[in-house]
Image (cartoon, rainbow, N blue to C red; front, side):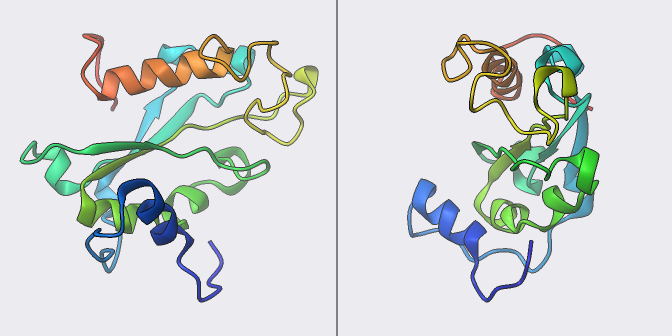
Length: 161
């Protein structure tokens, strides 16, 4: 988000998707950033997840002209929409790289939950939700799997809007 003369988004994508990526787009395309309900996937207060999440769908992916990769990006503590609005999802640089490289980026949103000992809105990396937090059976991981399945076409439920 800060301009430190270092393109972390580009380095991250090159690490995951290889060094032969196309250069990032000059700007992200605002209409390609979509808000979706995390509630239908099991999000919400009981999972210490926000009611909404965001998804960036590059133009070529939206019109179905190419097969696209899927990238799930977890924000840090105190970096969710409840604190920063859309600053994180719009200014990390990921969307600019995603646009030219046909990578759909999902930005799930954690939420602060005082009763769950998560006042800073962190994703569950220490077990505040349940003992299975770091496995596929963890509360938040189950929600993420449902989101991934929907986007990848493995579910026949309604689409993100």
